[in-house]
Length: 368
Image: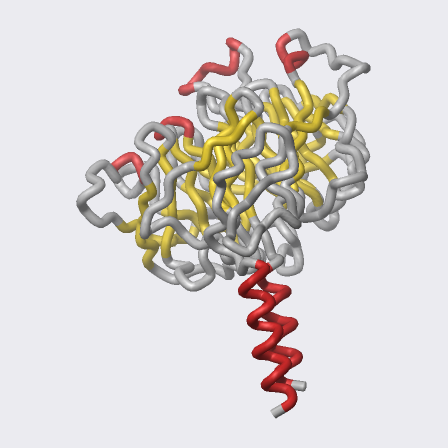
């Protein structure tokens, strides 16, 4: 019996694919996963380089944060064995980097985080508490300039006033919203309301903020578009448009946090979507990526410029970098979508051969 349990746990872990989509400042889509890292160009994928310090992405709660001013993406909890490391990938140099995090660490199992557009300070919410990495003075990623020297930043409390809602059992749904962080689906709010955290003041608003919609009070995901109106370029032009996708997929609710109005667009198709699907936005495109299957699809938001949604707008499937069943005995990901990189290698999951070996070992152990 013990051997059977061992076998099943190993095989199950091998199928646990995690990842997230990220747009670089130029609008190019990248996928970082426990199968490998991919960059999309002209409907085909380039496998991004790895290094000894690339995280394994063996984790149950991967947190991905683009940093456009640094042309990089940062990852929290990218490897459950090293929760004290903040990993990053630079789109210019194609190099991996890690920063050591010091001080009392939050619970990584349910943490969510964003990076402030201006200060490059990371704000996180976990177990009902708001914390941050570094500050807006000299303790931030802007000063991590020498790749040959180690760099560290501290976890410190982020809020100057108490969290105004009961957040102990709240699974945070948060996104950068101009100079605020908006929290969706907070218990006790009404439909179409968010709680706001004022980044530069380090304080919560006094009451939930209505944003001109009736989106449900539910769990979901949120992400921020790069797009800005000219009048939003004040103070370095932090992006203001936030997409909220509730778990019921009833729509994509785009909140313009500059004026607190909301426009609804079509939600993702239920077929192929899952609670594990992840979202990211460029200037005018929203992408959904489902790591377990490799499904990638996008929704066009060029209508943001004229503020008139296109009623004919539809989600479009893109080539998949891999499929859930495409790992061969040599660990090669053959991919099922047109344009998939046939030479992409699965670096961090058990291959089918390894799973078979584990099965036989487990079966033998159970007999003994």
